[in-house]
Length: 378
Ligand code: HEC
Ligand code: HEC
Image (cartoon, rainbow, N blue to C red; front, top):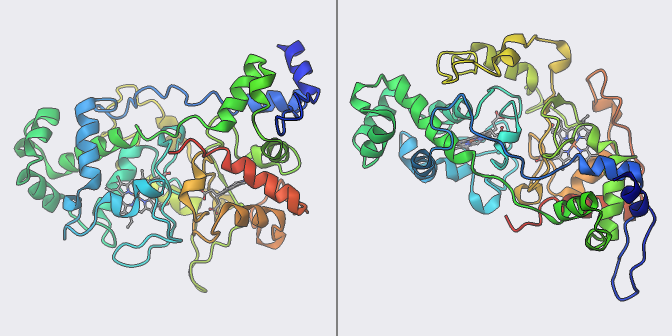
């Protein structure tokens, strides 16, 4: 493998008729590139969710997801905000429920690659994160009893009974949790496909220079910036391009002039109060695996105003960007990092971010690379 990497490190020109036919990466960059795959990994089933991977649950969850029955006034479904046509997001800066909410609607692709959910990580599992919008008064506005009543009187009753047992015998809170677990089973299946970046990465791994050289020179230069001078891979690491943790990327955290988004600090408060964590009684995992994370969280001042590092696969389809949707496209994100305002970085230890001083061509290269993480047509 070392020998092959060395060979790949030498720019190869394969005939003038083939545009950009060369591999520009050094051996070290190739090794780093391999760490961003293979994709998709085998996520397995979620042990905290007894219906994870269950085909009937996935089908039921998919139907629930699109059905306004999950809102009390029957005007809003999950899909109203998480629209499959726009990367399971809504193309708006901030979500609109009964009023404009505080944050951007994130895409729901590749959820299993995360450990924490929501921009501030207020949940440590997908089903808990699915409970929140059903009960939120500015979103779907159900209470537990109204939800149980609606489902009991609907055509979903028999599918629910078959999957979970007779709804009539279930406490309304159990009904809420079960519906959320069916929703989670469906959402787990939303995984982005292989992209031109993956074909490049896999070709490098296989030592297939010819296949690797199909990846444009611009995307390769962008990847080099991403791994090197841009320091992007410090946070956007691994196959899903996120380290799954919380950082300050220099995005203002004021919602209005007087109100701030506490970010991870608020997420930790929500987590500590939630009965629906991996450590709690609603997790179906007898070993309570993953509970250590929620059990060990400590409040730190440096959590204030930090947000979860988003994965970058499929990002092209879920503009606008950042927790407040303040950046309209990928070029704007690159400009943001290029001219990052150091005074906005309020957290110790984010010294990794510095203004980059990129040329126009370098900015285009970085955008081309980011786009290559989304070109699977999904
Ligand atoms: C009014 C718009 C709206 C509706 C309706 C809505 N969501 Fe969301 N969703 C959001 C927003 C905004 C966030 C980010 C929340 C946060 O960070 O606090 C989010 C976050 C999520 C996440 C976390 C994603 C991640 O990357 O961590 C999941 C999962 C989710 N929603 C599932 C659902 C499900 C299931 C439904 C239906 C029961 C639903 N949502 C209904 C706007 C909405
Ligand atoms: C210190 C960690 C860190 C570094 C370094 C970093 N990012 Fe980020 N990135 C984040 C965080 C955190 C967010 C979300 C910030 C927010 O919403 O306030 C983010 C958001 C993004 C988004 C928006 C994704 C979405 O779905 O909204 C893109 C695209 C992105 N980063 C690309 C990059 C690029 C390109 C670089 C290198 C120039 C980079 N990042 C460097 C942490 C980082």
